[in-house]
Image (tube, rainbow, N blue to C red; front, side, top):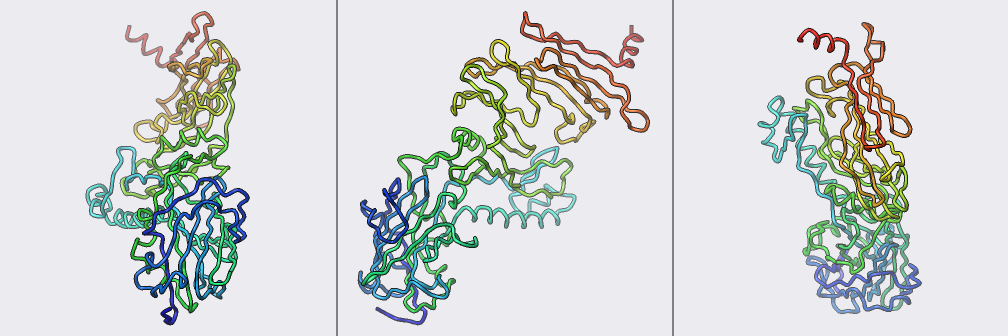
Length: 485
């Protein structure tokens, strides 16, 4: 074998077909013995896998390998039998010892366009030069923002491609401290065997559920002289650009993997949010969503593009049941205007229907044809607080029903109070939803709450199944009406 100072051999699986076995071998343990691997190898590696620039492989005994890969809910199991005429498994710098490495990438979320949103429009900034047009107030500040966000977006995407080192002390996920999984190397005359488990909880985030598409790459490093620098290793593969997941092996699972306590909800929430992703594993009950946040009067960009919003799918509030159909409220979606909670009717974990209610309060009461529901908006007249009286307090109501099949009726809008002045509003709703009242609270000259005036009342009529509504005009409005007669 050719020997040079700091000799490094990097064998890449980039040119070889790969089989990813579904399900871990029965009795799998990362002990380096390989007895449980009954399937054919996932790939073989030899001189044909030589990376240009590294020392030549003289023969299979010089360096060759059989590698097994198996994926299950537990994670990715890797095993290998390596022929090597000079085994070096320990070194002060473990990256310079003989070892295997694995790259993983899963279907990624979609970045929203590089843009900033104000109360008028979404302003896309595809290039630095576009700042002169979309941010005329301060093009220089916009350009600095564009450079910062462009670099940040590249890093967000790079974080979704993970590299693991299989070392004698365990599996290392590069970029994180400590080990994330078990690994074991066992030498034998003429080579060594190894096994490792990359647990599902250390996989990169993904936008796909159920998970069926996986990209994987395996590297084998042979450092006979033990002096190779990490930089040499990182730049020595001509088959792919470093970290470029498009050149990894694409594998489609015959039996996709489902995750979380409520897989159907996770899958539905991802489907409507191209910028959402989750961390695979049994506790997959939250999302990260890439969104461009709306910010009123943002004519010079300040907000990040995208912002990373956390959505907790795990907090599920039950509002009632009709037979075996349950109605729950859960945060499931985020956009530039905030969080959108869903009303979800479900039978077990099967979603029957869903309805977005944003951050509004929802109350429910049992009454034919199933449940009567009242959605209550209590906030500024404009969600962003912009425009004429945009921050003025406003309350209004939507009434609808859910039947025994989990279907929602068309909502009926019920008038509330406010929206025209800066005075506070209040409301009351009876427990059985038969009486709804909205009030306007007049403030005195010092800004303290004064008298409370009834603005609207809605009374449920059991015979018609609808509300009888009454609107009460302010005294000034009544007087104006009389003067015009």
